[in-house]
Length: 422
Image 1 (cartoon, rainbow, N blue to C red):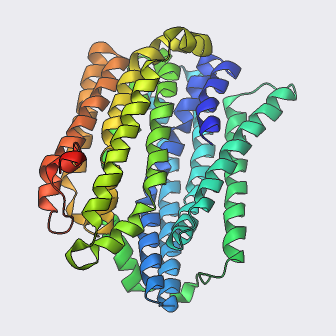
Image 2: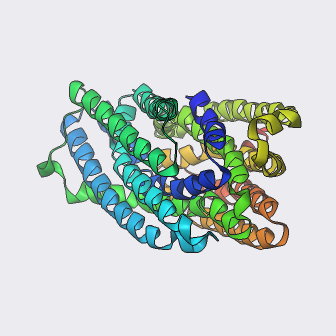
Image 3: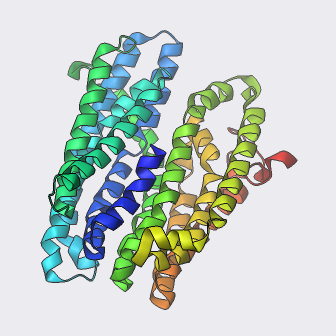
């Protein structure tokens, strides 16, 4: 999967013109925004299913998954409205020619609707995660990545001219196939009963919305952190969009991969924190945090050693912008990765609704610096704004949130930065 996700931008950069690739990137922004409407519902379903199964309350599990599916259906409807409204303004944000408007909107709508339907995958991720079957989430991501690239190569090898609109059609079909795979697997398992409309109850819905309240604020912060970068770049230097978007690919993949790998810590943290004296939570957390820091430093160092000539060979016209912003974006991602486990601990302790100021402040700092620096020094300024926001994120968690949540999560400020000293 890593090869597929990382190879795709470089493949498209060669198969499309720079203008076509920029159109695809702008339209594909919908696929980055829509998942934020999930508001962490899959994590809440995981927590609910795992908790109720551990107590042997299968009827309550059925009620939880039924309510979860109902909430996701509502989120799907909201995201569709967002896609429609966003399509009316997406071309006004970026400075593009009139002939490009129709193509950008078509890609936006198709990708946006496919991504909205993809929100239903969160239901399956939550159910499978609750019974510790995380491999199905990974398999889904592998399948859609593989099929997307296979579809591109089939079109290209058939002699048809690849275009952003055709890419959007392929993406729509791939998401549909992936969802069918998840549905078929869910219907053949016996651990969790199928959701029923009659099992949807107000108390369960209220519980989900309470949990989503804190997570929704986090998503707003994430949107301000990474959701507007490409749009800002398209506003100040449209020609830099391909290079900047490619530079974003690996950092986004890295943070997503780390989040996926770390997700099994959610039920384990929850189990430890529920024990008298918080069980072995602190020891487990500090050990994993140490491994995480070593890993991020290693990855950052390895990429700095890649010679510039190699990037120039693969990226051609996009290489100049890429090489200027990639190290900055990678450093910013490494700082944020250091907070991943603490974020899972917050959800495990079910106190996410109390941690709302820091993500908003972080996102606001990130957005302000990115916009101001963009008009001053161009795309590099956007990347520097992202780096400043990531440093603020780490400092807020260490110096503000950890002391406030110490009763629920027994950690000290050094836990995120120097876990070996705790």
